[in-house]
Length: 199
View 1 (cartoon, rainbow, N blue to C red):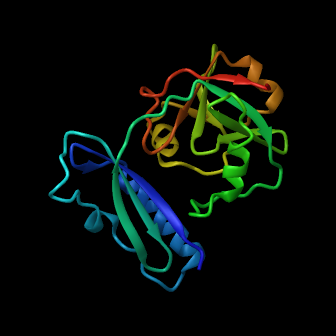
View 2 (cartoon, rainbow, N blue to C red):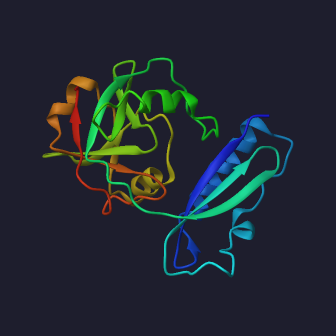
């Protein structure tokens, strides 16, 4: 059975961006399990009583047609300071699959960099586990229109008008002065500046 995941940030005992996580889960159910009723994340996500609330947790929900597992692990931000450009024209990660083997294989080619920046059919997409945002001196913060996965933090920033989605070709990267990564666990403000290299 095909399984999917939601990774939800729980801070001060409260889950973040839950409505956007629910929207993505609902889209997944509509695509893969159209006859099933999507579970309500708000009713499921509750930090266990034995866990202190003064630290940040990653709540990992694994699901197929039904919920397979819900787990909580302390989260520590892993700084990503350098991205290596890699190419993967056939890669498909439009839904948040539990099976990340293709992404892991790309990640393992990173060399001395912290992660990879994936270019698909000439367009910049995402890293192996996060969306990317780039700063343009005239346009401000933007995110690649051709993302692999429309992440919840990306969608939140787009709806807030803090970033715009634009097509970014590989050769356009040099027009940008800064890059950062974002995902459900990492906000734009928390993400350190990142260098992009061909290595």
